Every structure is written in structure tokens, then in C-alpha cells.
Image (cartoon, rainbow, N blue to C red; front, side):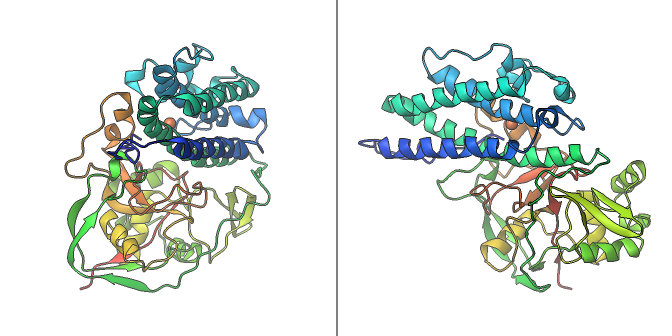
Length: 413
Ligand SMILES: [Fe+2]
């Protein structure tokens, strides 16, 4: 995703001294980089190599790719005399930046036994050291240029921290022994009742309006007509999903979009992702291993197609992303953040007036604005400090390996 990272650029007056900003950035950099390592720490070198499907990446690749991002976009252009750690890594760890050069095929990331996890750790240390020096020693003009890039790199790495967990869960789901990533992992409980809030018909402001960090796809702020609509205060639960299943939810074509029905049949879906029926009792693989389904917990690992079918079964709809944003801004719905990402019925499109930033960084978000659906909120795997009301996540309609759930909405008759 690309970003308009302008908090520091927006400061029109020259600062007499950026030392406090630099100290804050060095600390933020250290904290984010070490969080990636903390998340990777329970995983063996064997765990870190596997790629269980083309959409998922190995842990080792996430660790190296986030490092390459700083090397490619920060150190090479801005740190004079920076010694590239290994010239071959740009090909291996460039994800999709065409302007940054050729790259390894995505579905073959899991075939890279070399470099080893130890070499990737050395790569990370090499880049960490160089970034720290650059923050400390850059002249003021360079600092103004690099501060937004570092902030972007940190937010990029936080996105990969969540992917690291969703991808290893998918890998573990291929293992009949149902491994646990962390035996103590506990998803949060819901806090809301099953009430609804009403949004009155009006023109509302949508998008990111502050000068703090945001991705480019959250801009420009624009006005939209929203409502009247009622948005559920709570997320859909496993218990409600079991009712949908018992009522033939996965066997009734009238509930499904055509593409969704085709996917149900091609994939043989009978339940959310990672669910398994053992002796008539539903279980799910979680980050803490295989667990009994908790009817009171939010449903997770459902695709857009499933969320849409459930809403139709319930006689309701999914909220649009604007309805979701207004509901949260009005402060009246629960579990918007930190539980599961929530599918909306909105296609992932540019906001009116959106222009991707120039250069390779412009490839971050803009070129993906077709054929995907927007999710709002954040999940229990989203790193602290990475959630906000204007945040737009996006995935293809059949995807369900992310921590994805839903809340419902209803247009009053
Ligand atoms: Fe990336």
C-alpha cells in the first residue's frame, strides 16, 4: 500500500531542532522491528520456510521483505555509501514493485531454503543499524525527506506482522497434528449486545482528515449521502453462524451470489475456514491449536461470499464502508477494532479525486483498486497502534485466511 505520509512534510515552518522527532522515530523503529521478531520467535526455521498457498508467504520472507523495503526505498537513495547487504536479495524480496525491478515469482517464495533464517536475521540487523545511523545523522533537509518514508516502512511492516500470523495459521492448517503457534493465544471476547444503532439520512464526511499517518487510499476526504440505515452494534457470532449452517446455509443456491455458489461447490465449503467436525462437534484450528467452537465468540475466517450469503439469509445486508465509518465516528458500535476485520458491501475503489503518488511507492495501493472488497476495523492480530476509523483493508471475495468476520446492517422499510 502506498501512503501519503505527510505529518512531517506538512509542517511548513522549519523546526529549530528535530532531535525530539528523531528520538521518537528511533524508538518507534526499534519497537516495530522487534515486534516482527517477537512474532516470529515461536517458529522454527522449518516453520519459517513453508508457503502453503500462493496467497500466503513464508515467515522468513516476511522478515526479509520488510527489511528490503527499508533498504530499497530509504537506505539506497538516502544514505550515502550504504553497502547493500546482498545484491541478490532485491530480486528475492521485492513483492510487487514493478518500478523497483524484476522479482521472484510469488508462488515460489516457499522454495527458498536459502538464504537461511540466520542470514535473514543478519540482514535485518544490518539494515536496522544503517537506519538508526541515518535517523541520527541525516542533515535537516534529508530528515524532512526520510521521516515520511520511515513512517511508511513501519506501517508496512505492521501490515506484514498480521500477515505473518494469518499465513502461518494457514500453513499449520495443512498439518494433521494441528500445531499451536502459541498455546496461550486467546482471541478477545465480544463486548456488545445484539442491538442496532440508527444512522439518519444526511451527507457525511468520509476519509482521513488529520495529518497523522494514513495510507493514500484513505484520502481525499469527501462527502457521501449515508442513511437511513441501522448498523448492528455487535459482530456476528459462531452461534449465529451455526444456525445458518443448520438452516442449509451452504446448500441453498438462492442465498448465494453466482460466483460465491461456484466457489462453495469448487472448494467444498460447509463451514468457515479451519472448522472441522469431529464426532459431530465443531472445532476450529486457532493460533492456540484446535479448539471447540465457542458459540459466543465472533465468527472468523469467512469470505466475502459467505458474509454476503449470511446477510441475505438473515434478511439484512452488509454495511457499506461509508455506513461503517459513520457508525464508528458516531461512537455507537462495539468491537469495531481488535476482534475481526469486517467485510463491507463496498468494492475497493479510489475515493473521488484520488491520485496515486509518483514513483514505485505509488504501486503500494492504487494499482489494486479493482475486483476486491473493502474490510473495515482491525483484528486481534493487528499490531497495536495500527487501527483507525478511516483504514481501508481489501481482499478478494473468496479469501478467508485473514481474520475476517462481519456485522450486519438493515435499511428501514
Ligand atoms: Fe509488502
